[in-house]
Length: 193
Image 1 (cartoon, rainbow, N blue to C red):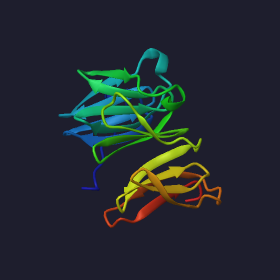
Image 2: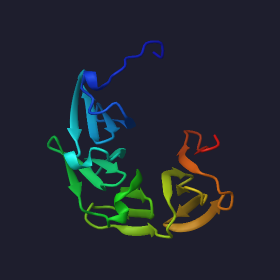
Image 3: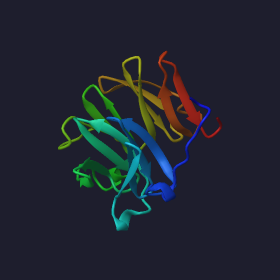
Image 4: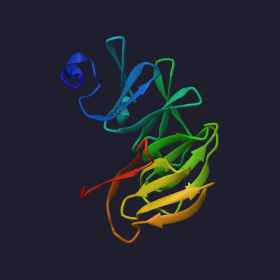
């Protein structure tokens, strides 16, 4: 109701108090942390670490794709959450393991990395959409176009996997995140506001 709040921490069962992403999927709250995920369901919190070697790796996004829960990380690639475990998926090159954002659109999974964007429809192979070395910050859709924000290289609009136009590419504006609201307005979150 916006008047009452409940605070959860490691004392309540969270994997970590550092929370990077929260997603509501299939009547469960998935919480992405540094080092893994927590799931809140039926007033109970369960935690699922990546591995002891990856405790400092940040979870960057959690989405449902092809009836699977996908978890991206900034440094350790892509995971699928199955049978109560996070299982790594060997889909990307080492450089592609630095995933900034995931987007499910038109039955495909778009994966934004620090070196570009790849897309898959089956989790077995990827097609490269952008490989210009742009450091991608986030993905959204707007007016039936894929919208890609970059750190310091503006925003790019793609239709049918072809670049349509770019904006703010010469502004050297640090763009952290973009989102489209229900009225199709594009929101840009930058270092400067």
